[in-house]
Image (cartoon, rainbow, N blue to C red; front, top):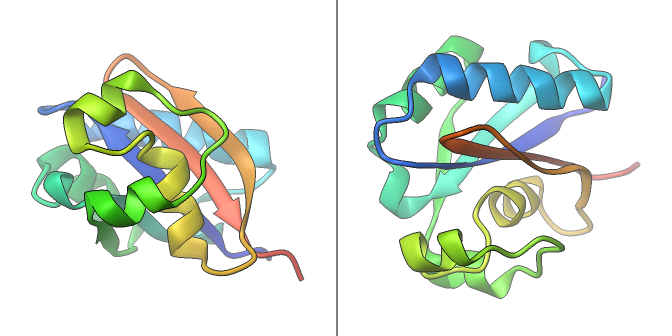
Length: 126
């Protein structure tokens, strides 16, 4: 089974149910289930977001965070102005997923959106 690293972006107050629904939609697209998830990752400014923390707890994985500078240094295929305004980086979900997966990581599922969240999935081939 592949180890998948999910990057998440979220608006303040996003409910865990919305985050989990988006995560599971992205996992289905990747042909994987909850058990493949090893990390949820997001921007440092979202570290205390209850919906993200509850989603990580529901999946039994840590919520890893990255600073704006780290996120901005990671090239992403789908930059967004909303992320730039909110956290100072052109992307959160894709950048966080790639950073969490480590060197050589590739996006398995690019940024997907719900009304108040974004999710991307990365893994390291091999």
